[in-house]
Length: 443
Image (tube, rainbow, N blue to C red; front, side, top):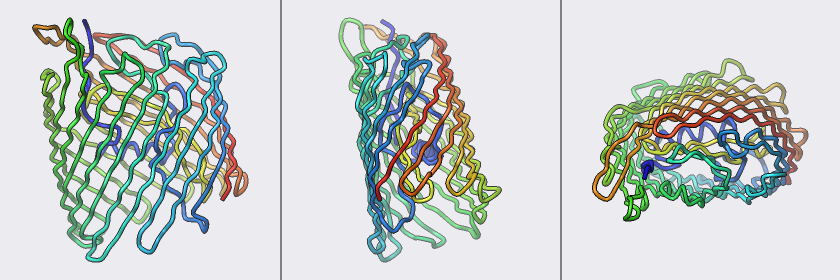
Protein backbone atom coordinates (compact mmCIF):
# COMPACT_ATOMS: atom_id res chain seq x y z
CA UNK A 1 0.00 0.00 0.00
CA UNK A 2 1.34 3.42 -0.90
CA UNK A 3 1.55 5.84 1.99
CA UNK A 4 3.61 9.00 2.29
CA UNK A 5 5.95 9.34 5.24
CA UNK A 6 5.34 12.02 7.80
CA UNK A 7 7.00 13.40 10.93
CA UNK A 8 9.17 16.30 12.21
CA UNK A 9 9.16 20.06 12.70
CA UNK A 10 6.26 21.79 14.41
CA UNK A 11 3.88 24.60 13.67
CA UNK A 12 5.95 26.90 15.82
CA UNK A 13 9.49 25.64 15.56
CA UNK A 14 11.89 27.72 17.67
CA UNK A 15 13.86 29.88 15.28
CA UNK A 16 12.96 30.41 11.65
CA UNK A 17 9.57 28.79 11.31
CA UNK A 18 8.30 30.87 14.21
CA UNK A 19 9.79 34.01 12.65
CA UNK A 20 8.17 33.29 9.30
CA UNK A 21 4.80 32.59 10.87
CA UNK A 22 5.02 35.77 12.95
CA UNK A 23 5.89 37.71 9.79
CA UNK A 24 2.78 36.32 8.04
CA UNK A 25 0.60 37.25 11.01
CA UNK A 26 1.98 40.76 11.40
CA UNK A 27 1.58 41.62 7.73
CA UNK A 28 -1.77 39.92 6.98
CA UNK A 29 -0.43 37.37 4.52
CA UNK A 30 -2.26 35.65 1.65
CA UNK A 31 -5.38 33.60 2.28
CA UNK A 32 -4.61 29.97 1.56
CA UNK A 33 -6.79 27.08 2.70
CA UNK A 34 -10.43 26.36 2.40
CA UNK A 35 -11.75 28.88 4.91
CA UNK A 36 -10.84 31.11 7.84
CA UNK A 37 -10.65 29.64 11.28
CA UNK A 38 -9.14 30.48 14.64
CA UNK A 39 -5.70 29.32 15.62
CA UNK A 40 -3.61 31.35 18.05
CA UNK A 41 -2.21 34.61 16.73
CA UNK A 42 1.20 35.97 17.67
CA UNK A 43 -0.05 39.58 17.40
CA UNK A 44 -0.23 41.74 20.52
CA UNK A 45 -1.97 44.99 21.09
CA UNK A 46 -0.77 48.47 20.34
CA UNK A 47 -0.21 51.01 23.10
CA UNK A 48 -3.56 52.30 24.41
CA UNK A 49 -4.81 53.80 27.72
CA UNK A 50 -7.35 50.97 28.03
CA UNK A 51 -5.56 47.61 27.77
CA UNK A 52 -8.73 45.55 27.35
CA UNK A 53 -11.04 45.07 24.38
CA UNK A 54 -14.01 42.95 23.32
CA UNK A 55 -15.36 42.73 19.80
CA UNK A 56 -17.74 41.05 17.37
CA UNK A 57 -17.01 40.48 13.69
CA UNK A 58 -19.06 39.31 10.72
CA UNK A 59 -17.33 38.11 7.53
CA UNK A 60 -18.85 36.96 4.23
CA UNK A 61 -16.72 35.07 1.73
CA UNK A 62 -17.10 33.60 -1.75
CA UNK A 63 -14.60 30.83 -2.52
CA UNK A 64 -14.31 29.17 -5.93
CA UNK A 65 -12.86 25.95 -4.40
CA UNK A 66 -13.77 25.54 -0.74
CA UNK A 67 -12.31 22.03 -0.43
CA UNK A 68 -8.96 22.85 -2.06
CA UNK A 69 -9.25 19.76 -4.24
CA UNK A 70 -9.12 19.18 -8.01
CA UNK A 71 -12.36 20.53 -9.47
CA UNK A 72 -13.62 21.30 -5.96
CA UNK A 73 -16.98 23.06 -5.51
CA UNK A 74 -17.45 26.80 -5.05
CA UNK A 75 -19.50 28.14 -2.16
CA UNK A 76 -20.35 31.12 -0.01
CA UNK A 77 -19.80 31.02 3.72
CA UNK A 78 -20.27 33.19 6.77
CA UNK A 79 -17.93 33.57 9.76
CA UNK A 80 -19.40 35.15 12.89
CA UNK A 81 -16.74 35.81 15.50
CA UNK A 82 -16.34 37.01 19.05
CA UNK A 83 -12.92 38.30 20.02
CA UNK A 84 -11.29 39.82 23.04
CA UNK A 85 -7.94 40.48 24.58
CA UNK A 86 -5.74 42.53 26.87
CA UNK A 87 -2.22 43.96 27.00
CA UNK A 88 -1.35 45.11 30.53
CA UNK A 89 2.03 46.52 31.62
CA UNK A 90 2.80 45.84 35.30
CA UNK A 91 5.97 47.68 36.24
CA UNK A 92 8.71 46.21 34.07
CA UNK A 93 6.54 43.21 33.22
CA UNK A 94 3.75 42.84 30.66
CA UNK A 95 0.95 40.30 30.46
CA UNK A 96 -1.08 39.88 27.28
CA UNK A 97 -3.60 37.57 25.69
CA UNK A 98 -6.27 37.29 23.02
CA UNK A 99 -9.04 34.89 22.13
CA UNK A 100 -11.26 34.36 19.09
CA UNK A 101 -14.16 31.99 18.50
CA UNK A 102 -15.83 31.77 15.08
CA UNK A 103 -18.96 30.02 13.83
CA UNK A 104 -18.27 29.14 10.18
CA UNK A 105 -21.32 28.19 8.13
CA UNK A 106 -21.38 27.21 4.44
CA UNK A 107 -24.31 27.82 2.10
CA UNK A 108 -24.14 24.50 0.19
CA UNK A 109 -21.18 22.46 1.48
CA UNK A 110 -22.58 22.16 4.99
CA UNK A 111 -20.34 19.16 5.75
CA UNK A 112 -17.62 21.80 6.25
CA UNK A 113 -19.54 23.72 8.92
CA UNK A 114 -17.38 24.14 12.01
CA UNK A 115 -16.63 26.22 15.06
CA UNK A 116 -13.03 27.40 15.18
CA UNK A 117 -11.17 29.13 17.98
CA UNK A 118 -7.82 30.43 19.06
CA UNK A 119 -6.64 31.31 22.57
CA UNK A 120 -3.16 32.63 23.29
CA UNK A 121 -1.42 34.57 26.02
CA UNK A 122 1.89 35.24 27.63
CA UNK A 123 4.20 37.23 29.85
CA UNK A 124 7.14 39.48 29.01
CA UNK A 125 9.34 39.77 32.10
CA UNK A 126 12.46 41.64 33.18
CA UNK A 127 14.51 41.58 36.38
CA UNK A 128 17.76 42.96 37.72
CA UNK A 129 21.14 41.77 36.39
CA UNK A 130 20.02 42.19 32.76
CA UNK A 131 17.76 39.16 32.86
CA UNK A 132 14.62 39.17 30.70
CA UNK A 133 12.45 36.76 28.80
CA UNK A 134 9.07 35.66 27.54
CA UNK A 135 6.52 32.94 28.26
CA UNK A 136 3.66 32.27 25.86
CA UNK A 137 1.32 29.53 24.77
CA UNK A 138 -1.97 28.81 23.11
CA UNK A 139 -4.49 26.34 21.77
CA UNK A 140 -6.44 26.49 18.53
CA UNK A 141 -8.84 24.73 16.19
CA UNK A 142 -9.16 25.35 12.44
CA UNK A 143 -10.46 23.82 9.22
CA UNK A 144 -7.30 22.36 7.69
CA UNK A 145 -6.35 22.51 4.04
CA UNK A 146 -5.17 19.23 2.49
CA UNK A 147 -1.52 18.30 2.52
CA UNK A 148 0.23 16.39 -0.26
CA UNK A 149 -0.31 12.77 0.76
CA UNK A 150 -0.93 9.27 -0.51
CA UNK A 151 -4.38 10.20 -1.82
CA UNK A 152 -5.88 13.04 -3.85
CA UNK A 153 -7.74 15.45 -1.51
CA UNK A 154 -11.46 14.82 -1.10
CA UNK A 155 -14.34 17.00 0.02
CA UNK A 156 -14.67 15.77 3.61
CA UNK A 157 -14.04 17.98 6.62
CA UNK A 158 -10.65 17.85 8.34
CA UNK A 159 -10.31 19.72 11.64
CA UNK A 160 -6.89 20.50 13.06
CA UNK A 161 -6.26 20.99 16.79
CA UNK A 162 -3.05 22.66 17.93
CA UNK A 163 -1.29 23.30 21.22
CA UNK A 164 1.94 25.23 21.78
CA UNK A 165 4.06 26.60 24.60
CA UNK A 166 7.33 28.54 24.38
CA UNK A 167 9.79 30.08 26.81
CA UNK A 168 12.76 32.39 26.17
CA UNK A 169 15.33 33.69 28.66
CA UNK A 170 17.99 36.32 27.86
CA UNK A 171 20.97 37.61 29.77
CA UNK A 172 22.94 40.70 28.76
CA UNK A 173 20.26 43.17 27.66
CA UNK A 174 21.77 45.83 25.39
CA UNK A 175 25.35 44.99 26.38
CA UNK A 176 27.94 43.86 23.88
CA UNK A 177 27.61 40.17 24.79
CA UNK A 178 24.35 38.37 25.52
CA UNK A 179 23.11 34.80 25.91
CA UNK A 180 19.67 33.54 24.89
CA UNK A 181 18.02 30.18 25.51
CA UNK A 182 14.65 28.88 24.31
CA UNK A 183 12.41 25.88 24.88
CA UNK A 184 9.29 24.99 22.94
CA UNK A 185 6.55 22.39 22.65
CA UNK A 186 3.88 21.99 20.00
CA UNK A 187 1.31 19.41 19.03
CA UNK A 188 -1.06 18.97 16.10
CA UNK A 189 -3.85 16.45 15.61
CA UNK A 190 -6.24 16.05 12.66
CA UNK A 191 -9.78 14.66 12.74
CA UNK A 192 -9.87 13.03 9.28
CA UNK A 193 -8.69 9.37 9.37
CA UNK A 194 -6.55 9.77 6.24
CA UNK A 195 -4.42 12.37 8.05
CA UNK A 196 -3.68 10.25 11.12
CA UNK A 197 -0.09 9.88 9.89
CA UNK A 198 0.37 13.65 10.30
CA UNK A 199 -0.52 13.74 14.00
CA UNK A 200 2.66 14.62 15.89
CA UNK A 201 4.25 16.42 18.81
CA UNK A 202 7.52 18.33 18.87
CA UNK A 203 9.96 19.42 21.58
CA UNK A 204 12.59 22.02 20.69
CA UNK A 205 15.41 23.87 22.38
CA UNK A 206 18.19 26.29 21.52
CA UNK A 207 21.06 28.12 23.19
CA UNK A 208 22.85 31.05 21.54
CA UNK A 209 25.64 33.53 22.17
CA UNK A 210 25.31 37.01 20.63
CA UNK A 211 27.83 39.81 20.08
CA UNK A 212 27.33 43.46 19.12
CA UNK A 213 30.54 44.70 17.45
CA UNK A 214 29.09 48.23 17.23
CA UNK A 215 26.35 50.25 15.68
CA UNK A 216 23.19 48.37 14.78
CA UNK A 217 24.81 45.01 13.97
CA UNK A 218 24.31 41.86 16.04
CA UNK A 219 26.04 38.53 15.35
CA UNK A 220 25.20 35.20 16.92
CA UNK A 221 25.95 31.50 16.99
CA UNK A 222 23.48 28.98 18.39
CA UNK A 223 22.87 25.28 18.77
CA UNK A 224 19.28 24.14 18.14
CA UNK A 225 17.66 20.72 18.46
CA UNK A 226 14.16 19.42 17.76
CA UNK A 227 12.55 16.06 18.46
CA UNK A 228 9.30 15.11 16.74
CA UNK A 229 7.35 11.96 17.54
CA UNK A 230 4.74 10.61 15.13
CA UNK A 231 3.01 7.58 16.69
CA UNK A 232 1.38 6.45 13.41
CA UNK A 233 3.88 7.66 10.85
CA UNK A 234 3.30 5.06 8.18
CA UNK A 235 0.92 2.16 7.51
CA UNK A 236 2.63 -1.23 7.16
CA UNK A 237 0.71 -3.66 5.00
CA UNK A 238 -0.86 -6.44 7.07
CA UNK A 239 0.58 -5.23 10.38
CA UNK A 240 -0.59 -1.75 11.34
CA UNK A 241 1.11 1.57 11.89
CA UNK A 242 4.83 2.14 12.38
CA UNK A 243 5.97 5.03 14.55
CA UNK A 244 8.77 7.43 13.62
CA UNK A 245 10.91 9.76 15.71
CA UNK A 246 12.78 12.59 14.01
CA UNK A 247 15.87 14.20 15.52
CA UNK A 248 17.13 17.46 14.03
CA UNK A 249 20.41 19.04 15.13
CA UNK A 250 21.31 22.52 13.86
CA UNK A 251 24.28 24.85 14.15
CA UNK A 252 23.01 28.38 13.46
CA UNK A 253 24.91 31.49 12.39
CA UNK A 254 22.74 34.58 12.91
CA UNK A 255 23.02 38.17 11.62
CA UNK A 256 20.65 41.00 12.62
CA UNK A 257 21.02 44.54 11.31
CA UNK A 258 18.90 47.68 11.61
CA UNK A 259 19.39 51.11 10.09
CA UNK A 260 17.49 53.81 12.05
CA UNK A 261 14.03 52.38 11.38
CA UNK A 262 14.52 52.58 7.59
CA UNK A 263 15.97 49.14 6.92
CA UNK A 264 16.27 46.01 9.01
CA UNK A 265 17.29 42.47 8.18
CA UNK A 266 17.52 39.14 9.97
CA UNK A 267 19.38 36.17 8.54
CA UNK A 268 20.19 32.65 9.67
CA UNK A 269 22.45 30.10 7.97
CA UNK A 270 22.48 26.62 9.49
CA UNK A 271 24.06 23.25 9.06
CA UNK A 272 21.25 20.76 9.69
CA UNK A 273 21.43 17.02 10.30
CA UNK A 274 18.10 15.21 10.55
CA UNK A 275 17.68 11.51 11.29
CA UNK A 276 14.64 9.23 11.46
CA UNK A 277 14.18 6.18 13.66
CA UNK A 278 12.01 4.24 11.24
CA UNK A 279 12.25 5.95 7.85
CA UNK A 280 15.92 6.32 7.01
CA UNK A 281 15.18 7.24 3.38
CA UNK A 282 14.01 10.60 4.71
CA UNK A 283 17.27 11.46 6.54
CA UNK A 284 18.77 14.81 5.60
CA UNK A 285 22.01 16.70 6.10
CA UNK A 286 22.93 20.01 4.51
CA UNK A 287 22.55 23.76 4.60
CA UNK A 288 19.27 25.40 5.65
CA UNK A 289 18.39 28.94 6.65
CA UNK A 290 16.26 32.00 6.13
CA UNK A 291 16.46 35.72 5.55
CA UNK A 292 13.93 38.51 6.02
CA UNK A 293 14.23 42.12 4.98
CA UNK A 294 12.03 45.04 6.03
CA UNK A 295 12.33 48.33 4.16
CA UNK A 296 10.36 51.46 5.02
CA UNK A 297 11.12 54.05 2.31
CA UNK A 298 8.43 56.44 3.59
CA UNK A 299 6.33 56.80 6.72
CA UNK A 300 3.39 55.24 4.84
CA UNK A 301 5.01 52.36 2.93
CA UNK A 302 6.56 49.13 4.20
CA UNK A 303 8.09 46.26 2.22
CA UNK A 304 8.75 42.85 3.78
CA UNK A 305 10.63 40.23 1.76
CA UNK A 306 11.57 36.78 3.02
CA UNK A 307 13.09 33.52 1.87
CA UNK A 308 13.62 30.26 3.70
CA UNK A 309 14.89 26.71 3.23
CA UNK A 310 13.95 24.27 5.98
CA UNK A 311 13.36 20.59 6.63
CA UNK A 312 10.50 18.44 7.87
CA UNK A 313 7.70 16.42 6.24
CA UNK A 314 4.24 16.90 4.78
CA UNK A 315 3.91 20.60 4.02
CA UNK A 316 0.57 21.59 5.53
CA UNK A 317 -0.95 25.02 4.96
CA UNK A 318 -3.73 26.39 7.10
CA UNK A 319 -5.82 29.54 7.28
CA UNK A 320 -6.63 31.35 10.51
CA UNK A 321 -8.15 34.50 11.90
CA UNK A 322 -5.51 36.68 13.57
CA UNK A 323 -5.77 40.02 15.36
CA UNK A 324 -3.92 42.90 13.71
CA UNK A 325 -3.98 46.52 14.89
CA UNK A 326 -4.75 49.66 12.91
CA UNK A 327 -3.57 52.33 15.32
CA UNK A 328 -5.11 51.18 18.60
CA UNK A 329 -8.03 49.35 16.96
CA UNK A 330 -7.85 45.53 16.95
CA UNK A 331 -9.05 44.15 13.61
CA UNK A 332 -9.83 40.49 12.95
CA UNK A 333 -8.05 39.63 9.70
CA UNK A 334 -7.32 36.48 7.72
CA UNK A 335 -3.72 35.29 7.93
CA UNK A 336 -1.96 32.15 6.72
CA UNK A 337 0.44 29.72 8.31
CA UNK A 338 2.79 27.02 7.08
CA UNK A 339 3.51 23.87 9.03
CA UNK A 340 6.88 23.06 7.46
CA UNK A 341 6.55 19.33 7.81
CA UNK A 342 8.33 17.91 4.75
CA UNK A 343 11.88 16.89 3.92
CA UNK A 344 12.83 20.23 2.35
CA UNK A 345 10.78 23.37 1.62
CA UNK A 346 11.99 26.45 -0.26
CA UNK A 347 9.81 29.52 0.26
CA UNK A 348 10.00 33.12 -0.96
CA UNK A 349 7.53 35.93 -0.46
CA UNK A 350 6.87 39.65 -0.51
CA UNK A 351 4.40 41.68 1.56
CA UNK A 352 3.66 45.37 0.95
CA UNK A 353 1.78 47.64 3.33
CA UNK A 354 0.57 51.16 2.58
CA UNK A 355 -1.08 53.58 5.01
CA UNK A 356 -3.20 55.66 2.67
CA UNK A 357 -4.56 57.75 5.55
CA UNK A 358 -4.55 57.54 9.33
CA UNK A 359 -7.54 55.19 9.09
CA UNK A 360 -7.14 53.37 5.77
CA UNK A 361 -4.40 50.85 5.11
CA UNK A 362 -3.81 48.57 2.13
CA UNK A 363 -1.72 45.44 1.82
CA UNK A 364 -0.61 43.05 -0.89
CA UNK A 365 1.40 39.84 -0.85
CA UNK A 366 2.96 37.26 -3.15
CA UNK A 367 4.22 33.86 -2.06
CA UNK A 368 5.85 30.80 -3.65
CA UNK A 369 6.65 27.55 -1.83
CA UNK A 370 8.22 24.39 -3.27
CA UNK A 371 8.31 21.31 -1.06
CA UNK A 372 10.05 18.01 -1.75
CA UNK A 373 8.46 15.05 0.01
CA UNK A 374 9.94 11.61 0.40
CA UNK A 375 7.52 8.80 -0.42
CA UNK A 376 8.00 5.25 0.86
CA UNK A 377 6.27 1.93 0.23
CA UNK A 378 6.30 -0.11 3.42
CA UNK A 379 5.40 -3.81 3.63
CA UNK A 380 5.94 -6.40 6.35
CA UNK A 381 9.32 -7.33 4.95
CA UNK A 382 10.82 -4.22 3.36
CA UNK A 383 10.82 -0.45 2.99
CA UNK A 384 11.73 0.98 -0.40
CA UNK A 385 11.80 4.47 -1.89
CA UNK A 386 9.50 5.34 -4.78
CA UNK A 387 9.48 8.57 -6.82
CA UNK A 388 9.46 11.64 -4.59
CA UNK A 389 6.57 14.08 -4.57
CA UNK A 390 7.00 17.78 -5.41
CA UNK A 391 4.45 20.18 -3.96
CA UNK A 392 4.35 23.71 -5.47
CA UNK A 393 2.10 26.38 -4.02
CA UNK A 394 1.62 29.91 -5.39
CA UNK A 395 -0.57 32.58 -3.80
CA UNK A 396 -1.35 36.27 -4.14
CA UNK A 397 -3.52 38.57 -2.04
CA UNK A 398 -4.75 42.17 -2.06
CA UNK A 399 -6.64 43.76 0.83
CA UNK A 400 -7.60 46.96 2.60
CA UNK A 401 -8.74 47.89 6.10
CA UNK A 402 -10.71 50.95 7.15
CA UNK A 403 -10.77 52.03 10.80
CA UNK A 404 -14.09 53.87 10.45
CA UNK A 405 -14.13 55.10 14.04
CA UNK A 406 -12.56 54.12 17.33
CA UNK A 407 -14.98 51.20 17.67
CA UNK A 408 -15.87 50.40 14.04
CA UNK A 409 -13.72 48.87 11.31
CA UNK A 410 -14.14 47.06 7.99
CA UNK A 411 -11.84 45.12 5.68
CA UNK A 412 -11.99 43.37 2.31
CA UNK A 413 -9.58 41.11 0.47
CA UNK A 414 -9.06 39.32 -2.85
CA UNK A 415 -6.90 36.22 -3.06
CA UNK A 416 -5.74 33.62 -5.58
CA UNK A 417 -4.05 30.30 -4.91
CA UNK A 418 -2.80 27.50 -7.16
CA UNK A 419 -1.23 24.20 -6.21
CA UNK A 420 0.51 21.56 -8.31
CA UNK A 421 1.51 18.22 -6.75
CA UNK A 422 3.48 15.80 -8.93
CA UNK A 423 5.39 12.55 -8.47
CA UNK A 424 4.12 9.44 -6.72
CA UNK A 425 0.80 11.29 -6.31
CA UNK A 426 -0.23 13.95 -8.85
CA UNK A 427 -3.03 16.51 -8.83
CA UNK A 428 -3.58 20.26 -9.21
CA UNK A 429 -6.15 22.85 -8.23
CA UNK A 430 -6.69 26.60 -8.10
CA UNK A 431 -8.96 28.82 -6.02
CA UNK A 432 -10.08 32.46 -5.93
CA UNK A 433 -11.65 34.13 -2.91
CA UNK A 434 -13.26 37.45 -2.13
CA UNK A 435 -14.10 38.33 1.45
CA UNK A 436 -15.41 41.34 3.39
CA UNK A 437 -15.89 41.79 7.12
CA UNK A 438 -17.18 44.38 9.57
CA UNK A 439 -16.26 44.64 13.21
CA UNK A 440 -17.35 46.50 16.33
CA UNK A 441 -14.99 46.70 19.30
CA UNK A 442 -15.69 47.81 22.87
CA UNK A 443 -12.70 49.29 24.67
